[in-house]
Length: 374
Image 1 (cartoon, helix red, strand yellow):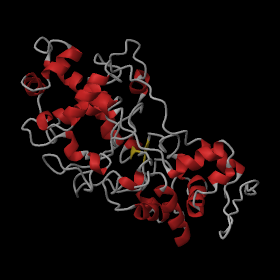
Image 2 (image 1 turned 120 degrees about the vertical axis):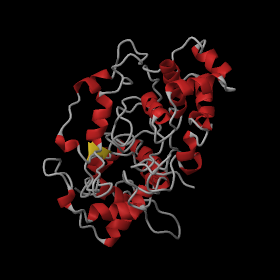
Image 3 (image 1 turned 30 degrees about the horizontal axis):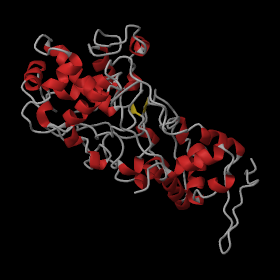
Image 4 (image 1 turned 30 degrees about the vertical axis):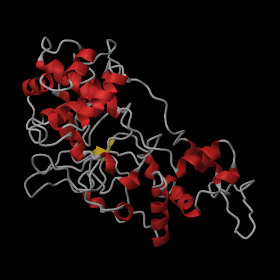
């Protein structure tokens, strides 16, 4: 299709002409990635969602080692606010080396699934599990209640949730997770150079849109077209939040595998902490249909949740196992993907891209514009 360049030329003394390179169809596709940020929607399953006092308490607890049984580390130890709420290690380190890379905690509000394998269907459940996971913070429900009762946070906690002594340990655990969730809902990535470009296109301001670098525009065209990246990385967050086989090995050792979504579903379907369970605060149980209708399949082995690409330049290393060090390595992985690693009965959506060196560079240039400028 002919490029849309009408009214897109920007002439300035002593400079070359700049233009919008996208076709009309590519512009329409680009508009689907915004506007950013999205409007906030409170989580009906969490009665303290968007509660200022709960948010403040959640922020304090997030950075306090009280949530680990021996005070060894806090949520922020693995989800470092100075590193986009992740860390630079390939795989997370709890009490032992864990199986997966630490995902960022930004832009989590309103998702359907949480975690690399989707073992939670709410943000508060996703916040709950690391607290009682033996390889991570290792509290029992009882030890967590004791720690909160004896802590400086007890007055705030009881102001929000009532008399703690008369609450069961399960309820205290859930309420702690819901305060953490109320805080995490506030974490979003900032607007980016891409967002300025996208919004300029929407209002028809081609002069402003043409300030977006040509290399990033060419990369976006690859992202939408031959690269087929937008099949999975779509919507406001550049993610369909579903599970795919990206051709990354899922063997942990010669005898162990990371089951990915298959294991996540086993966990989810046996969990009491779902939108279909008794701990949801939504009497209508909206969203519970997903966990009620989900079914396990052999093709779920080795599939992992599609991460958001917003802020992606700040969250290296990449993939569920942290095996790719930078964005160029990610592009080259897909460019030269070994289709033999893909499941025979899974999705046949990936193939070698055969990009030139210039095209690899352009695609990286586009991805970098999805992060805010330093």
